Length: 579
Image 1 (cartoon, one colour):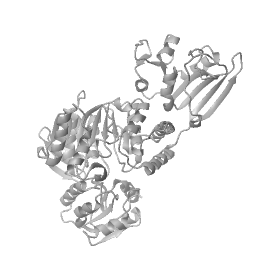
Image 2 (cartoon, helix red, strand yellow):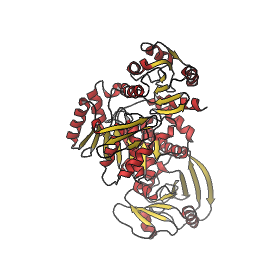
Image 3 (cartoon, one colour):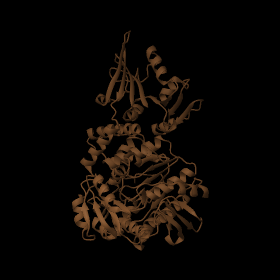
Image 4 (cartoon, helix red, strand yellow):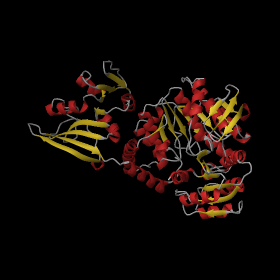
């Protein structure tokens, strides 16, 4: 909880000539009762008026000019730094107009004392929108100068309302390139994204797997690791995690309420507000800072240069995974232009790691690194070898390590694992042992990537939704089922190159069943079926994911079922399988 405590006159003056009226007896009692055993954040002038840390509390003084050194008292240069020092404890803020204005958008509760008298002075409590709050207490005190105690609780959305708010923003705004609205919101939160180092990952395919491997290795090394990735596969909250634990519904709703308040204020000021993805990215940065992460691993949503995540200034390593033709409407229609967009995350002087691939991509990324003065390490596929593979993972050798067990199936995961190892080795100030690398790779989990969730019949899920991913999936499927004769369940989004995906994967199938993902950008099952009939003679469109699963079970016999395409429908399939 973050609460403001303030006393001000009827003309909004904060006490007499800017002084907080500590001499009001009831005010003193209320202040003591509310704050005892908690953290108090004070402005410098307020602390100097009191003259000493208040007993029974932890005090954080905000001052950029003086250092206050006393038991149970710390000094912070900014509100953001003070909140980070509070480490998620209940915080009570008191101070002057500047501190209150900065803290108001963040406050969950306002404890206000309105003094029914006019004072002289120019330090004012900022005007706040009472429509954003519910008054929960009103207690009038008579006397020579009467006053009233008021308590306001912010009108908070619950988790369902927060998700509905984001869905509405998605429908309203869609994808809008440009970072200024998001930067404006972050500035009002005092830039939480700059409070921890970040490994920043861009690419067309392999981003999610590489992120999971890096995160798992760093956790095994003993660090508190925040991750932000998209899209979610089985639960919307899995995009935001700390040490593998998803953000709680309560935290998500509290942060989204806070961000909605800031956006409403920006809109009232005539300023442009962020898109849904940008707002959820702000949430990720703020929540990970609040959780006290040692480091974060952040995946670009789309592209790189103009992606919402590219507001970061504390990048420790930039990672580029496999790049292919995807999001051409936004990133360009050539491999060069897409590589330039992805390489936009590379920061001046910061090491970059590139997964070895086509000469076109490598030239573009190397050029960006030269321009930025960044050391580039290319992870070559020929420098690691898979020695064993089955449905549940692979074992690989590298020049440095032998017999690394990786609990992700698919030969292509060797490239991602080698990239993850190289990325953590570039970190400065972090100790990552060989044991941490081995443990992290052995324990890593990433759902929806060549994931076998059913044995009778065999059902494998994979999020291949573009040609580059489809090529990798084809290679893996041919290795596991060289005779072909499989069943395929397919659902895709209309803005993907589904024809090329079909050309690569549909000829392997004896029968294909298409579905319509639950997504505004979904390609209808009938339209996808018409496309895939050019590559397979037996294609039918299902009315629902559940019907598709029932049809597949009936037809499979001993044949494996491969479900792939957009991640947005795989959760529904998993539910149908386990029902």
